[in-house]
Picture (tube, rainbow, N blue to C red):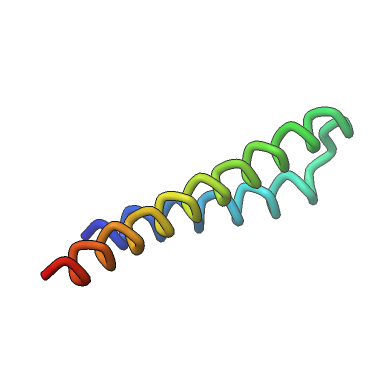
Length: 62
């Protein structure tokens, strides 16, 4: 279930970026949307890396 939530967040970010790229928004608004999508991707990546390392540390200790 947790993976589905992350998948939905990533999918919404990617689809939002593509929707913004074809719209007639100003360059500033497009840049803000792209930066927001990129920061979401980075946050999801950091969270996944933290979870992986935490799980690996628990498995090593056992």
